[in-house]
Amino acid sequence: MTYSNPAAYERFMGRWSARLAPYFISFVGVHDAQRVLDIGSGTGSLTAALLAAGADIQVVGVEPTAEYVAFARQAVPSPRAQFRVAAAETLPFADEDFDAALSLLVLQEITDPGRAVREMARVTRRGGIVAACQWDFQGGVPMFSLLRQAAEAVAPEVMALRRANEAPVNRTSLQDLAQLWIGSGLKGIRTSSLELSMEFASFDDYWLPFVGGATPTSAFMASLDRDTDGALERALRNKIPERRPDGSFVLPARAWAVAGISGR
Image 1 (spheres, helix red, strand yellow):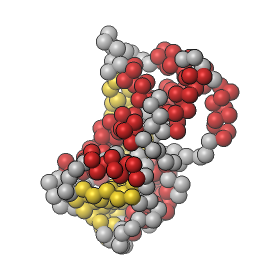
Image 2: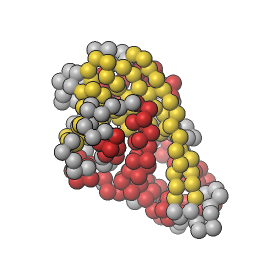
Image 3: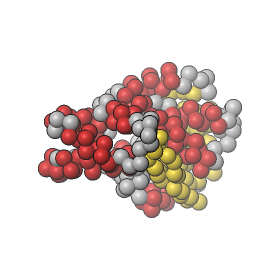
């Protein structure tokens, strides 16, 4: 799936990628002075967190969308970071070129995740770490599930048609990720549930980035809200739990993480 508006995506999900990245890095166990590959580097959240984790870490980020590569180069202007246009399934690097290959919130968007993981393993040195992290889309991110519930309530027929026509997405479980790593020939498989909080200053802080057109899903929801004369927004407002007197609120979030050791 291709997104073409990195600035809108940064407002929509980039802030949560930046919040999640340090948890992921801690789980992986990246060490200083390592050369790390960031698969699907997007707006640069994982690369920035990796650079902050060690003064001598070098990062190469690859991303198939040129607009995102240009955005990341400006967002992370470090001599220790490089960004290149490349697809995860066909990495332009030699065997065992990196100490670690990491992917943050990307695998679910890749058509052939197995091929991507095998490529990550190929370019990682023997004994290096190959790891990925993605949201638990099966109810682990109320930010999304509340919106889907509101959409189902106001436009059930439209949502049924969308489900019937949309392309399948790799929204795997923690067990599925572990099996993917095992099937890719990686050893010493570790998994973890990463928990964090999404803090919103107001309903608009939650809603407006959602309908900013950052992704096909958010563009669809924005269109649905217009077509229902704002009924989607009103239904969603009623679903937000425990708002504070100043209008702020917190939603929990959970991501799955998996790591394995390259045996090349």
